[in-house]
Amino acid sequence: MVGPYQYKPLPSTRHFRLLRLTGRVGEHFHCDLVTYEIDEAPAYYGLSYCWGSVKDKVAIECNGRILRISTGLAEALEHLSEFKRERDVDFLWINQICVDQNNLSERSQQVQLMRDIYAGGRRTLIWLGPYEQDNGSKALALLERIDRARISSGYTLDGRLYPQATMAECERLGILESGSAEWYLLEHFFAMSWFTRVWVAQEAALSRCDPLLLWGEIVLEWAFIATIAPFALNRGLFEVRNRSLPAMHTVNFITSIRALRDERTGRPKPWTLDTLLNSGASGGAVCATDSRDQIYAYLGLASSQGNGRNTSHMLVPDYGQEPLAVFRDAARYCIEESGQLTVLGRGGISTCGDWSLYNCKNGPSWVPRWDIPTQTVLGKAVHRRFNLVFKGSVSTHEEKEMYRAAATLSAQIMDTQDTSQLCLWGMKVDTISWTTAVLPIEGFTTWASNPMAGIWDSMLNCFATMGLHTPNQPLGQLCRAFFMAVCAGWAPDDSMVSDEPLCNLWAHFANCYEAQAPEHPMYKVYKELAVGGDTRRLFMNVAEKKIFVSSLGRIGQGPAMLQLNDEIWVLYGGATCYVLRNNGDGTHEFIGEAYVHGLMQGEAIQMLKDGLLEETTVTLV
Image 1 (cartoon, helix red, strand yellow):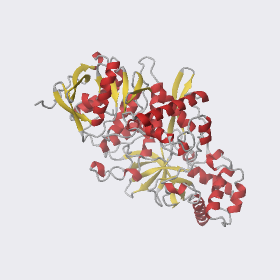
Image 2 (cartoon, rainbow, N blue to C red):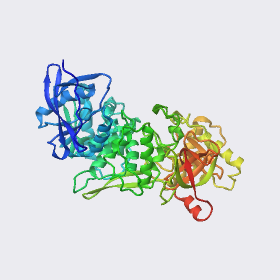
Image 3 (cartoon, one colour):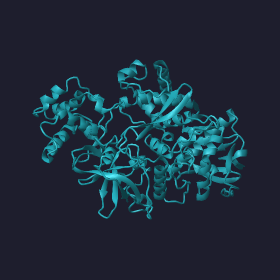
Image 4 (tube, helix red, strand yellow):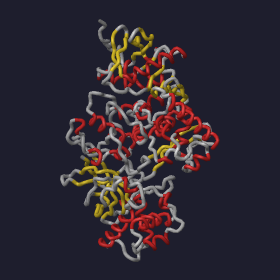
């Protein structure tokens, strides 16, 4: 009886194994594993795919021994054996087979080599899954129609924002008819599991030549979907049906990285880990079998470690570390490397209070949880959005600062004996004196359920009680501050709410009162003020959050877990404000980031210079 395959140790940290398919004999696939020094390896393709379930495994014969692999990979090998006959593919690098998955030390070492592995191959092959003849052919035809519409509309990857497409616009472009079932076909294509894997950014972005997507027997060029995805995103074609397609962001993210290549090496230019984690995680590629891969999957794309601003250590993949320690070290590294607190947007007790999954009762409140979806105060954008910009033949990525609460001051981590603590410089600016309940997502689906008018009335009463609003204060000023907080300052097309005509703001109240309380004494007043207003110009960015008023009358929005008497801080290196909770023992819990009207563009730093505030250190636990 044939025994199980036994991996032999690799000779050095620069060695890796390549797989050579030799075909099917009887019931098993046959293959050979051959060890090479990476700089002396023959031509090979890297495979990017979804592991699938590891519970039900399929046996293959490797070097005359039995090796068990996931059903998803076995399915891919069936098609790759045919693909091999059509192209000169002799060797493949497949993580699940070429790396001893039971050897934590080898896994850690091979992850460090993965940048060179994918960049050194001829190209990356992406296995999407089996092709369904009926639905697949219709989805493919639809993608081709969208591409023709893209070409006819003159769309190019030039960083411009195109107007949102209505259903009528879709029909004008000849893409989709209203109510067409083809919408679901398209969603089916982009909902394939590959688009959600955290590793795909590195695997596809580092490919020397454009990756090929294998969808059953269908072969698609990367450039095909790489131009469709941003066109669809910028035109809002998929938002017409309010579908959330993280796959579009994944494709756009990979394309942006691939576009910025080093002329000498031909490889993608490195990005800061801070930008990669926040931009990638806010897109859609966030699934990983091992939660530590939420960090390790981006290291191959990150800038050379140890060359940052004040980095005191390097991040080295170590599967012997607990996830909490990996997330903590990554957060510290990002802050030191960038001087920014962007990573804290994924922290806070609203999302980080439960570490029971990792056999840890209480984790630090400030450590980001990259393993779970998190909506930041910035909603659809990250703190420093990067846009791909082409200028002639030169491409670059620019980071757009939406907020700058700490102005130009950079974060500096102070030494503490306890690594679970984070000590930073900043200023306590205010405290929270009034707050709404958590605002449910479903409340914003209709005008009849929209809570904005009721919150507005309650807030005006609060201001009157606190003596913060007088009859002589223009109501329009307060209305704009309210909507700046509700929308986090930004309209859907990235313009500022501060520049919106007031009639657009009053129109929201008029519609709410018309649907909920037409007898309200202010309804007719708001209706007159709303003449010519367009409610589509505003995006309510407060679902699952709270609106609050501070002791000094500032209006803001913050995380669901904030409470009365929580403190509002501006921390150096922070784009936003932060809500902290004083523990009374010299430490604070990190509740989360907040938008506070009047503090988002460096106003607190000016108050510090004017002697109105004092800087101090704060210790987060």
